[in-house]
Image 1: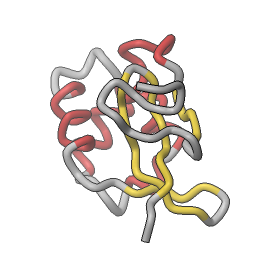
Image 2: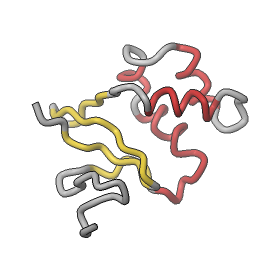
Image 3: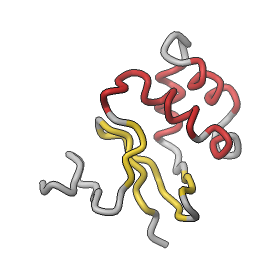
Image 4: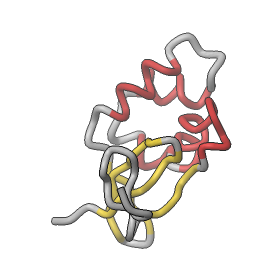
Amino acid sequence: MNIYETENGTNLKNAVLLVSDSAGQYIPKEFAVLFQTQLVEQINSEDLNSLLIGPDDKWYLDSWDSLLNKNIVITLDVRRYKIEHDGDLWAIPVTE
């Protein structure tokens, strides 16, 4: 593993840090708040609402797991990224 890789081998050289692991259990909520308008079209409304409520919602972690198992793509400055949660939450450039 080098300084540009996560523990699972994802290359972070051109990645963007979205939410630091210091946010802990609030990482999913922070992500949902930041990218709510983009997520509306990619996940169901129940999962999105659960993420926006936060850790007190009984489906919060299930909703986050569901989101991570989908090929969610976000757009930052006209570039497309997939998300990778490995401690920190990263935006990894999509190669097309």
